[in-house]
Image (cartoon, rainbow, N blue to C red):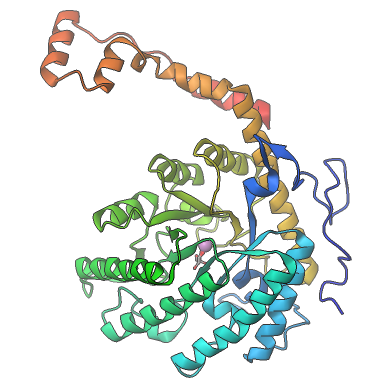
Length: 437
Ligand code: XUL
Ligand code: CO
């Protein structure tokens, strides 16, 4: 008996005029855009933690989710059964990828050895289901923040024993990710940050974090894992300040500790909001540094100011995302990973379909809009014109390194004043963008 019996088969593409809530209006996996299928551009991924482990609890109330296939126990059998249901969902939705933390898919044991064994037992089912369905693992990660041992952080803990335990956990998670053919491996800071600077040796903590990430790189080499590592920036929550606070801070950290060759960024929309940035800003910062790896696609609520992890449906935002992604060469190992959860009030299993379908369509529309903007080339041309003074003469000479402060001073003394500025035309740019929406 299938768990999602209301959804008989795979969600079809029915086009923009369809009124079927269980059909895609814009995500046509096979449709070609800029020479690549929508499936390969978007590389949609379902997250295991919110979609299959989210209970709907919040700080003020208990869980609300109806998940009839889940007996609520922490048994390995329940975890294995849940894994099979997850693949029924991935397949019916038509998501080519999924992502997990070690402790979402398998229960934590009483000892590390028992936790490893539990993970192996569930990973065997994941592998079988991947082979049966063709659904692949976008990335794996380790949960280094829920267990009380990590209350001071994991790699940045003041307790060296906890660093060692976290290393053992990541070693195993990386091995399982590799065994399952995972295309990436993610580090999100979790509790790697501080609550209070008076009790914190920040320099030492950051050095420990760098040491930890180097050990991961070394182990990847030892086991033959050649995929990228990702760091996922987030400024705060659960800590007051996380060391991976935003894209620029992560890039600086990775550069300082010689980690940039092995790491790219996994940017999350709601984390950008918490950092006081737009997602477009984060994408541009990462893209310009050649470090745009993957995105955790969700949205916050601007009136709430915490990590609400909602499914994104704002076409303006998805168009911005896809424009930047296309501009920097598209997603290769990464994907559009729905690190998003249905609202506590949306407790029926079918809501999982509505949520994913809606957001997949929103990103598909964003992709179509971004591709139309690029095909037309107006925005690109307007940006190019804005910088025209750098294409010839003085600008080209400066870019080529042919000037010094002295030569530039001489030029301005001769001229007396710089040539006049042109208008920035922000309003016109914004109007032109709206023509494509
Ligand atoms: C937390 C968050 C994580 C990471 C993986 O805010 O986004 O779920 O994506 O640990
Ligand atoms: Co995330």
